[in-house]
Length: 110
Image (cartoon, helix red, strand yellow):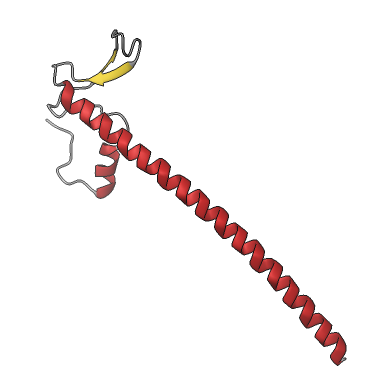
């Protein structure tokens, strides 16, 4: 008997897509292995113990692509925040100048 609910919310779908996959597309639990190749000695990787390596590798590559996009978006967002903060400081300075000008005008009137 399966404990998986047949209805899934968007939050459930996002949670299933995050991080390193725990299940292969074939349904088997993903195992962690250490590479013994000359190109990647000691590198950890995940794959299906049944030999269906391609599906898990593709999921991890997709995850890395999404992570790269998020990094770029985060950098753009941080630049935007800094630009907004600089604009705010400029506006605050201009407001202070206007308040000073108003105070001088009020002094002249009285």
